[in-house]
Image (cartoon, rainbow, N blue to C red; front, side, top):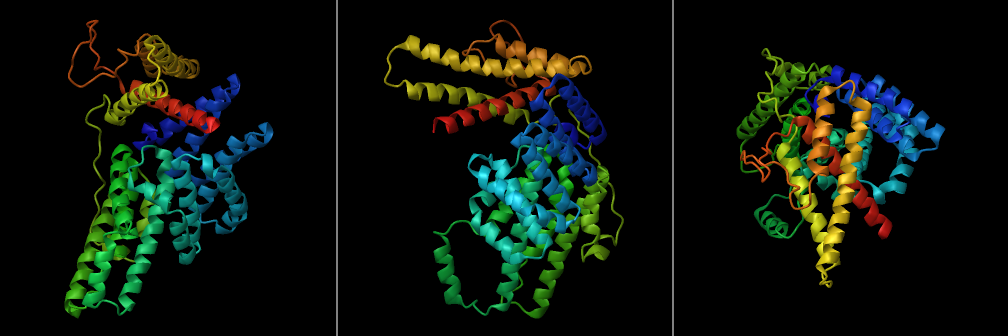
Amino acid sequence: GMLIGEGHFSKSQTALKQAANVSKEVKDVGTLGLSLSVLGWSMFVNGQFEDAYSTATEMETIGKERNDPRFLNWGLTSHFRNLLAMNKTDQVQGLLPAFEAYMEEYWGSMYNSDKVASVGMLIKMHLANDDLTAVTELVQKYQSTVELVMKPCTQLIEFGGCVGVIEGLIAVVGAEQQQQKTDDTNDDSKESNSSAAAADQPKTKREILQTALDSFDKYAETYPILHARANYLRGLAILAMADYSNNSTTTTEQQQQQEETEKSAIASFREAISWARRFSLDHEEDLVTFHELANAIYALPIETKVFDRQDAGTKGIDAEAVIKKYKTLLEDLNYNISSSDETNNNNNTVVDVVEEEMEKWRTIVSCTCQNLLQIWGSSNPNINTAARSLEQRICSSTPTTLLLPDNNNNDDNNGNTNNSMSKDELTILSLCIAKCEKMRKEAIIADS
C-alpha cells in the first residue's frame, strides 16, 4: 500500500503480480485474493482502468470456479468501480441489481470501509446520471455511513468510496446553496429562530463536508498520491459552499465575494494539477482540465510539485498510529478478560486466560510472518529480515514485556535497544493487527 501511496506503481504491480502467481502455485487462496485486490487498486488509482477491470474479471472467474463469494464480491465491486471511472454508465446500470443485492445481503457484516465504498459508488453512479434527487436520498438514508468520512481514512482501498461520498456532499450542499439564493426567507426573525434550533440539531451536511475535507487532507499525508484529488475536491467544495445570498451586501460586494471565491478555488485546482504532475496522474489533471474555470486555472504556468521523503526509516507508514493500535489491542484484550472474570478471585485462572489470548495473538503473528517468508523470503531480503525480526520480537515475549519500542532510545531490561523497528516491520505488524481485529469481530458476530 505504501509503494502505491507514494506513486511507485510499476514496482508495486510487479510485486503484486509475483505474489499472485506464487499464491496460485502454493494454493494460498487468501493471499491470492489480497494480491489481486490490491493489484486492482494500484491500477485504479493510477488511472489504468481497463487493466483494473481485467483484474476484476480474473477475481470473478476464480469466484465462479471455486464458488467463493469473496472473490465474486471483489470482482463485482471492482467491476462497478472501474466502469464508473470509465463513464460506462449503461454497463454500470446492468450491474446495479447484483450490486444492490450484495449490499442487502452483506451490509450487517460489512466493515465500515466497505460500507463507505458501497455508498460512495452508488452516489457516483447517480452523479454520473445527473440524478441529484437520488444522491440526496442516499445521503439521507445512509447518513451514519456518510459521517464516517469525517474521520481520516487509514487504508488506500478506502479512497474510491470516500471520494464518492464527498462528491455527493458537495453536490447536495451546492444545491442547498442555490436554493437559498432563490428563497426569500432571510429576515432577521427566521434567521434567529433557525440559529437557536440549530444548537440541538445534528451536524449539517455543510459541517460534515468541511470536516470530511480536512480529514481527506490528513489521509493524503499518509498516501501522497491522493493530494491531487484532495485539492480538486477542495476546489469544488469552495465553489459549492460559497454564500452570496446576504441581502445586506450590494451587487458590487457580491461580485467581489464571487471573485475571491473563484480565486481560492482556482488556487486549489492549480495545486491539484501540481500534485498530479508529480506522480504522472494524467487522469487526475483531466478532472481539472474540463472544469469551467479551466482558462483561468491555466492562465499562468503550473510547476510540478516537489516531493521527496526526507526520512527513509519509518516515513511512509504512520508509525505512531501503528503503535497506538498495538497498545490498544493489548489493553483491550486484558480489559475483556478482566470483565469476563471480574467475579472470579482465582488469579491463576485469569493468568491462564491472559496467556490463552496472548497465544492466539502470537499465532496470528507467527503465521503471517511465515506466510510472508514462504512467498517473499527468497526474492525480497527486506521482507525476509523484517518478518523474522518481528516474529522473534513478539513470539518470544511474555504479555508483561510485549511492548512496542518507544522514541526515547531506552534499553529494555535485557540491554536491547527497542527503537529500531523498520518500516517493513511496522507494516507487517499493522497487517497482523488487522487480522486479529477481523478474527475478534467474526468471533463476536458468531457468539451473537
